[in-house]
Image 1 (cartoon, rainbow, N blue to C red):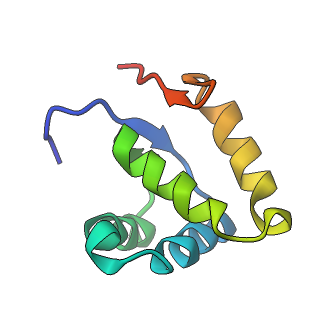
Image 2: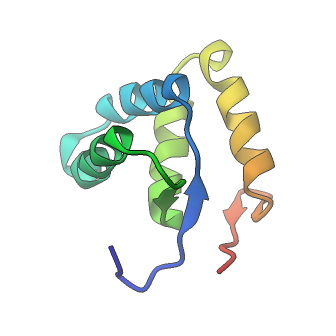
Length: 95
């Protein structure tokens, strides 16, 4: 996928991928269907980190925000550690 947008790589483990998929499934389908299709394809052969655009990352964070904190706080902490470009509520992509 090459739409010119900067991408952020995330290596989801199976439990994290399940949580992200569950969270995204709760959002309106028209907002997340392409992202969910890509996640599904990636999960079959996760050789490299999953590439998220800043907009897709925002959707993931929005979706996770709808789930109980006790279920998502570890994943959100991992995302923050993996992506030092997330600062004060904005995403700074590194190429």
